[in-house]
Image (tube, rainbow, N blue to C red; front, side):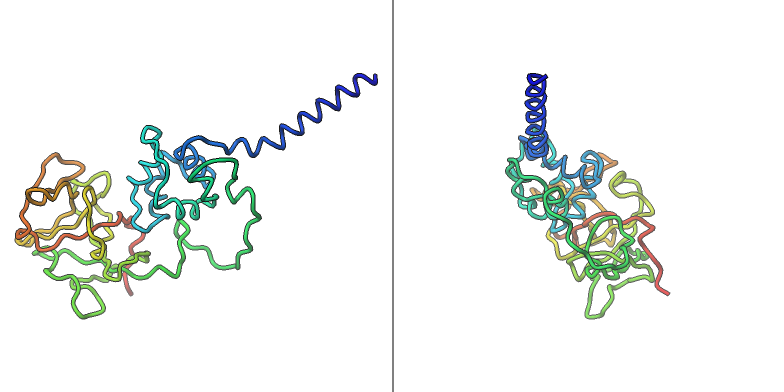
Length: 265
């Protein structure tokens, strides 16, 4: 019996040691992509379908393509300039996310901070409600959008009674309705596009373009070499214009569902 007791105590001791080390070992993930995917799942986000949602939550110019790159095991991304903000949004330790090691996400190692009671935001992603403001829809007249969207007034030229309560760092942001199927599935008819004129468009960004002819359209910026080349998601046609043929070309941040747009009373 004495021998059995010793063996039993030995087994219990080994089991306790293993359990103590388990929660640390389970967070030792070799790649950035593994850690980011785990943190997204812990936050209720699907790494395969919620890349756009995480990009919106991160903000600061982060695009779904940035998140997709970080999650791609084949890319073997080491880190990103968005890592501190991603860690903040997902509630994990920035050093653990960037470099790995035995560190745990903050949500598992630190008690939750005491929060003041306040009404829940109707939006599905956590953004400071103070950053939201009315952003108006600019209507498409018979000749398309105007030459100048903003003048010295408080409202954009051509503003309608429709608006969205949205967060945007651009004081000149506005919304435009999506017309046509050429940008499906990114932009669908009946939705709206959030336009931020203060952001310089980069290659592969979606843009709102007004031609000198008065035509306005939502396209992808494909290239600036030998002219400005524009394309679509649902059409293989590529359009090439000179700078003189384009009145303005503005960056589009993301689509806005129709349910987010209200009518001013």
